[in-house]
Length: 353
Picture 1: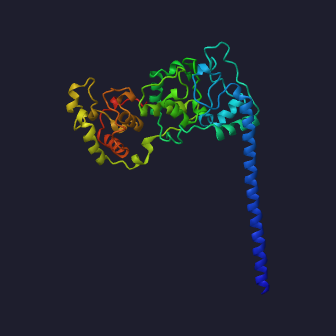
Picture 2: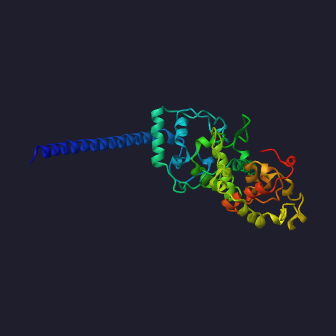
Picture 3: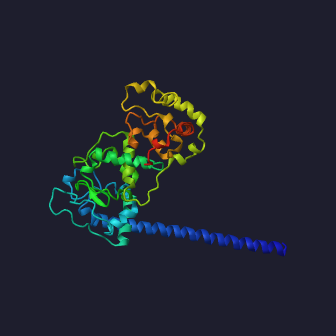
């Protein structure tokens, strides 16, 4: 064997030894982390079983609040955002129930007990590992394309369907609404969206016979109200802006003319003069597109009036909400056609919402 081969062999041995030590170190680190996690979960279990369970229930079936001291937490690991939960446990958040969980009992609005940061972390670990709910599907609702207009529609539903009667929110810096159940002015920082969505489908599944209201809301309406609640308390919430999407970048007015004919001419007329066959029985009459400078209208206004209907921008509710009917690319093409074709009197242009 040459000296060169011997040297290479020694290098291989040193390299292998280094890699072995590296992987053993990684394995030890993983084991240490797992052990620390297990210790935290064990500490959390002692706190939950020894302290929290004196008021909260962590197993069994949901019950009426009138049989309980405090909210059921069998699903606590999927209900709350971890950062909020840790703050709450340390006494850094406002009381959830202005008149106490049991509003029917006097003196129930006292401050919730608090624990140290280490204890809060241990309890949160226990929640995440043990307090799950198979009814709460992961990624059950996607709000990545939630728009500001949808938030406004959710706010309307919130008040129309009596949520306002029991849950407080904030408007112009003031708390408004009935102080009966949990306040919701910081719900976007508190709840996991998948749990909130499942709860909204049927609150009675979680708090039976407790005054929770099962509203006759469509699936789309549930999306609006859940999305609305997930914006509350969130600073600079990032709304989706469809008119900046790839569909609008590829929009084609010539294709849009066909969409206009298929969906709009029945009321607005073939040349946009508001004289389609459906116009005869409508009051107010359809907009006369030929007289409007739609080329100068804000893109978000045109999108909202077509997608969400006339009522969404304060116009006639007879103007349908075409969003679920017209595919995204067709809708973008339609708006491109409106902007390219109708360039009427500027004085008719509405102010941007």
